[in-house]
Amino acid sequence: MCGIVGYIGNKPVYDILINGLKKLEYRGYDSSGIMIYNQKPLVKKAKGKVSDLEKLFVNSADKQGYLGIGHTRWATHGPPNQINSHPHTSNSGEITLVHNGIIENYDSIKKILTQKGYVFHSDTDSEVLVNLIEDIKKTKNVKLGKAVYFALKQVIGAYAIVVFDSKNPKEIVGARLGSPLAIGLGDSEYYFGSDATPFLEFTKRCIYLNDNEMFIVNMKKGLTLREIKRDSIIDPYIEELKQNIEEVEKGGYDHFMLKEIFEQPHSIIDTFRGRLLSYNQPISISSLKKHFEEFKNAKRIIFISCGTSWHSSLLAEYYFEELLRIPVEVEYASEFRYRNPVINKGDIVIPISQSGETADTLAAIKMAKEKGAFLYGICNVVGSSIARETHTGVYTHAGSEIGVASTKAFSCQISLLLLMALNLGQKLGTLDQKRYYRIIQELEKLPETIKTVLKSDPIVESISEKYLDAENFLYLGRGYNFPIALEGALKLKEISYIHAEGYPAAEMKHGPIALIDENMPVVVIATRKGNYHKVVSNIMEIKARGGQIIAVVSKGDVEIEKLADHIIEIPDCNELIAPILANIPLQLLSYHIANKKGCNVDQPRNLAKSVTVE
Ligand code: F6R
Image 1 (cartoon, protein in one colour):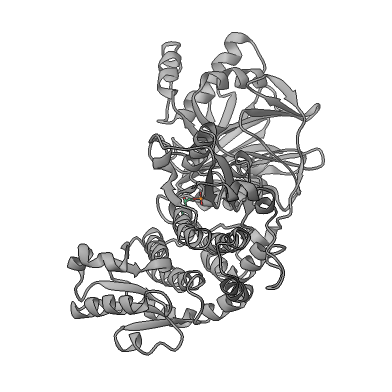
Image 2: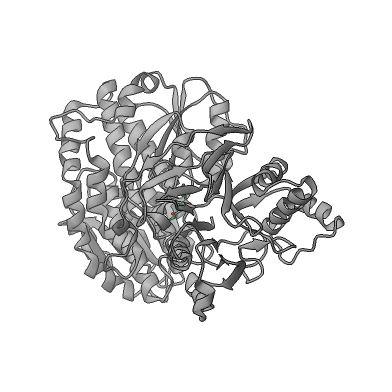
């Protein structure tokens, strides 16, 4: 969480910082601040959005300068207010720092610095770090780069930092451990960002820092990259970015979330590109081909992830066990990493993550790796920490997802997981050929089918209007649709702040049924194949208790139409594909309810897109 930007070069820095922070607001948006250097550092900070920070720059003289750093915050230590926002400045006023992460031993360092006479104004760990750097610089009489190096040797925790020393205004220093940091290379100019979006419009040449790496950018000497543990200079690996700026803009939609929902047909095309060529050609996923033996000999597959990606993992359990006949376990990364799980040789661990930066998932990967597991990652963000930490894997290629609530990334994850299961199932001989071809033929048409589902938007919007005052929602589904019930409920609660629970439909009578009365809307995913008649019985039970039913049904359903208060149709399809389609009206329902309630759909309270703290 938290977004970092920075720039040193020959362009006016103000717009680069402000626009860069706006692109990173998805990472945290409770307060923000920038430092611009023009003969001396000028720091301005504001509680609230980057737009609140902009309001502080009424005087154009304050915007002048060619070097600066900025930060948009998701509070960890201390409430979101002006004092706790970044940049933080050292006691002498010379060193300024922006930080994303957590310094776990900040309290003990703070005590030592306090004894030495340092004074702290904020509650943050970051202010401790900037003063530690200053203290080392002064006591050891070293330059900023060395001071940062020695300071980082003392701290425990996670960080991406960018640091500036006004005594040497031609230089910027930065480092990473656990939190992402990218450097954009221009013509005698350097951009810094928590990801590449702040500089995408200026340069496509990018270096992603690895853990334990630090950089010193000096306008005379250029860029130096160092490995902190070995204290050695390393050669930078420069990537050519393929993303373009349109991807990170709203493109005429009111919100990123809506844009991303409507982008799904195209995102699925990108996910399948080069992998699902046509129904009579074999599926081609190069990492699965290369590591087929590992899957063939696997005794067990363990999926680890958080949030929406955990819902993908749950659906993967249904897909993989059905089509591969290999036992599957699904774990919350945060639980998995802190218990002492049994991991045997021959176990495959599959982390799933949109951002590729989720701290718990990353830590769980490292732990599983140490225990000898084979790590196969599924990530969306190319070059992300999780993608680099795993032995091999596959990208979802959903494109940039800016809305905090995950939509297209989820659809791409589950479509890819189905494709993987079909590929492996066919090669392992655990999947009947006729069934394989039937599903593949439908999967090929998935982008078009999703377009049909999106046409239900006006119906979903009109349904949403009736439930703006609801205080609770239940979401029910069985089999392949159960993970979709969980995902539907999560989507609603995170953006509309309405309490919602997802349940396997049959579990309802073991407790939740007690909640049902005329004030309880119940969303039931009741597509035709699978456990259809059992779900119909569940609907009758809800009806008998006065609950209001919103049912997602297969086109042409007449039975549920008679029982439900509202129906939303999706095309009739294979039961393994139904969850991918059924999820889309639920995304739209959450979006419209939240939007009509006046909630901030793209940046819901207390959340951030990339959860880089545990
Ligand atoms: C919900 C949502 C979160 C993320 C979770 C994991 O809409 O986006 O629940 O799914 O924080 O994030 P990733 O997939 O980036 O590891």
